[in-house]
Length: 221
Length: 184
Image 1 (tube, helix red, strand yellow):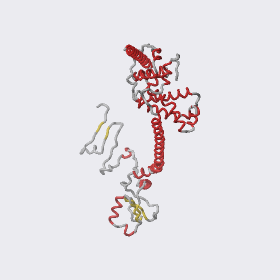
Image 2 (cartoon, rainbow over the protein chains, first blue to last red):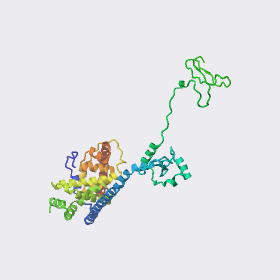
Image 3 (tube, rainbow over the protein chains, first blue to last red):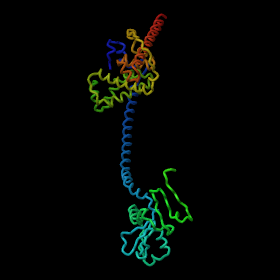
Image 4 (cartoon, one colour):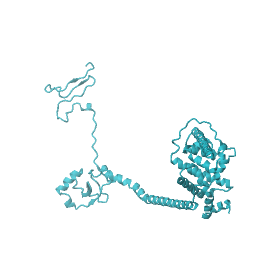
């Protein structure tokens, strides 16, 4: 540690380095050594304690791993269960049942199988419940009643089994010339809109009695 | 058994060899610690911590000669004391001022005994004392002192000059007092 700043031979420094004790003070080496021994005994204990803590932490982590993995595996079913299937009441077909002569209908949480011949053409849960109330089907058919909890796949089946909306044929408006009004049943001639002359006529315009609409479209106000 | 053999035995884990080394150097190291830490109990604790670290790391030490061992031990002790002083935040109150180039009359110091020099140094304020110890006794440059104590180099220089001035003053007062005693 001797630096370059003190090149001279300085007696006072060597005197200080050689100083072992002050004349007035008595330093007990034995007591001091005992203190050092105690200090050295304490520190390994601390080390051991830290190792125990580390081991405990590792053990905890290892024991927690299966729970962690199980929890990650259960995420998918939990999501499935979280889908609000309970409120969806749709007809369900039971794969195990004989589907030739019976039709399966689901009502919230159960499937009831009824004879196909006596089943309504479009089976909706509400209608089926009314049918059940009348006691006309189940007593004769002795149905197999399966109780299941609806799952996501069942919901998909339900959606597939739902009746498809009938598409209406799109007919151009001008093809309706001369036809009767389907809503009112009026048999009077039905005039189309004349776009070229910018005039709109309804079937009320010709009679003069109930002249409700007569619009003339013009570019000048 | 000489010091080299004691070191070898201590490396092997011999408590007796460690005790011998402690007995040999404990007093000197306590004085080193007391130059930095004024309180005797605190200084002893620093010395014990220093020896504890010394015995822990003795396996890495290669003995060459006694002076090297002494220097290594002193370095350990000084580091312990500086750590202690840093924990106490004694250097935060030190402010920088213009460093005057004051030279200490070393002849006057040479005329004093070791105990008297020691008593004079211990009477210095902590900032002055630490910088004086590190620069004048351990021989550290100001840059190293500044980085050790987390102060600027200028502060280190100003602390040293103030320490020297104060020491000079104390030596003069001591001389005057001694002269008066002689006259009486």
